[in-house]
Amino acid sequence: MPQRAAPSIVIAHRGASAYLPEHSLAGKAMAHAQGADYLEQDVVATGDGVPIVFHDLYLDALTDVASRFPGRARADGHYYCVDFELEEIRSLGLHERIDPASGRPRFPGRFPPEAARFRIPTLAEELAFIRGLNHSTGREAGIYPELKAPAWHRQQGIELAPLVLAELDAAGYLAPGQKVFLQCFDADELRRLRPALPAGLPLIQLLDRQALRSLDLQAIAAYAQGIGPPLTALADFGARPPRATGLRAAAAAAGLAVHAWTVRCDALPEGAGNLDALLRMLCGRLRVEGLFTDFPDRVRDWLAQEPG
Ligand code: CA
Image 1 (tube, helix red, strand yellow):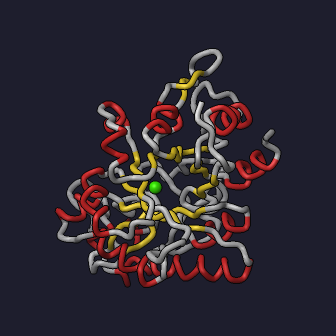
Image 2 (cartoon, protein in one colour):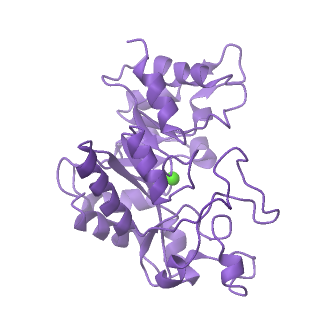
Image 3 (cartoon, protein in one colour):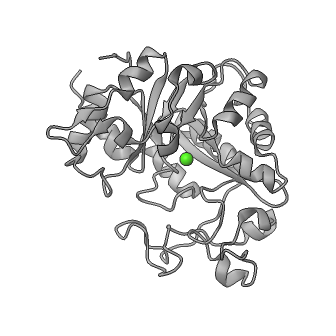
């Protein structure tokens, strides 16, 4: 079994999203305080071409857009970020994820959607915020931006990658030695971007079910430094005892790191048992290099007591 030299890195998935709304600055501050090594930014664009930190292509499940801007949904019923200018998006209230049809929270045990109002940050605002936290705490958390659906943005007339890279550059993150990973599901986009990017900027190829079906790790290793598979691609948690699938070993053989998603104490993979059993598999046995988690505190605590 491949051995990593250092403990797994803890990547705060959309912030400390178990405790505060995903991609709120408050949630990023909490993740920073909980000792996350990296804070994730999903990035989409506004209609006027400003990169914002937001997971979905549409605003419905996380904001009050339907009541603030009735009539602005497309025919499919969604209120798309690219159909709103930054000033409109700034005026929206950001809240915990709900099912727009029922209005019920996606995770009932998390921060109540009505308990407080947050805002969607621009990427520039968030990077400045994290640099501020790094300065005031003396502990540097890295950043982990994801280009969301670049091909779809292109269809809408927006080139997402140059917008994101310009912000990273302005904030100093394209200089050597910065704590940054750039991630994307779109292999064509990462392959296309690679030659223009600084050699030291590590790329993570995210893998969905479809990509896992026709996986060519050698091809990925030609442009990326790691893969981001779902937890269930690394182990069969339904087996007794759970067993490794071989993906982790194959990635190591191809020279690729593994940053797996997503560890959620309130939504563990079926059959995984409990958090301790899950992390013993991922960190203890498979020794993945990184974990995305909604619970940076719980993973950090586990790693602190991990047997060496
Ligand atoms: Ca993401």
